[in-house]
Length: 268
Length: 298
Image (tube, rainbow over all chains, first blue to last red; front, top):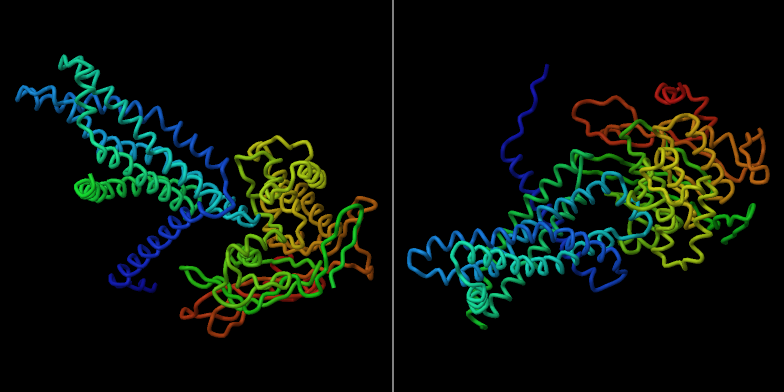
């Protein structure tokens, strides 16, 4: 029996690198086309509305529930520090800034990524393995226009709105926790929370979710449309969509925060 | 010059004068290596080409190349006189409206009803709703599925899904229909129903057909029978009977790259791809003494 030929490690690494570069190229093309398609027809408005309902309304319960409890927990955690200095009144400021600038957008992004990037990848992946995407192309429909762009537009519009609601409900949860555990008044909490924010914070808090929405939709679509290996491949793509989009959101958060702080110092 | 005629109320596909499909030295490969190489053939208008071969020999790839769903790595694919391999995706999307594609498992959109599936292309083309309903009814009646309008694909049997898929391919009145293993996995009775539909489509609408299959009996059914539109039944083609539609067989087989001869002896240094091993009439298939061809006959 002949011994199997050994493949040099250099070749394996080069293949892996080549495959990675090709994936980045394909993903970039998909992301680019998903945006440029907005400016030329045909448009699929009903598909966009369906996706807005699925992504926006469908994600509302988990976003609100998580937001309320995160807000409450944030008050309890920050209060333990402020109590030491007798400054419990500052919890409203701290919770408000943390929620609007950071936790609201990132938490919403991650929650929607968990729910929708997986959903998009599994839906498009199933269509891919059952040749429905090819059937669409065979009938003269561009799958990027019909499947990708409506999902990207829907998440771009819905994730900022979900974030705004998450911020509000988070502050509500914080207010309830502050009233019950710190004996702070609701008016005092809300006044401090609102006054702590400036325009730059709101811009930062609403720009980030747009980027997160774009990331989770394009990653979900890319993973779905590049499925290989039948139903097992669909499962793998679904997991990868959540993992990759979540990691990309967290990495993007760092750069967006740095950029937003820079811009806020320059402009506001 | 283009000509059109009607039979039993159906508009027949126009004749353009040249070959309906022409492959010139086409090759296609993926990461794993070359799958098809040196593929050259022509399909005349209203002719039926039966692509035979074992699983993985590139039959489906050939159909997808003809529909422009895949691009060849070498060679030229012409369909209805137009260079499909040189078209942009946007041009292809418009061009594919002349082609009907029946996928192996039907590939019906599972979130849409039968009516929505069949009417899909018409709605994409913004055909008025008043015109869509009669056209959908017509093609569903053609495949004898009129009573399934509101059903979802998951509520249909395998054979019914294929029939709806044929109706969907037919609704835009294509000039060429590509069938990817339309009878695979079906029981003999349902397979016969599908073959009858393909015969009707060919003989009533006058479409050019490319059929990929591993079942030789499907090919012989297309070669030996025709659909009589007046009698509305399938009849055997009598010997010497003039027929507008010819049937040809093409067999794919794995070949090695060093000498390019299909089925030739190979060694471990050869790279492999699939090529045309046989191209001939049904009679030539029947009379063939080649052991590989004979495998399909038994």
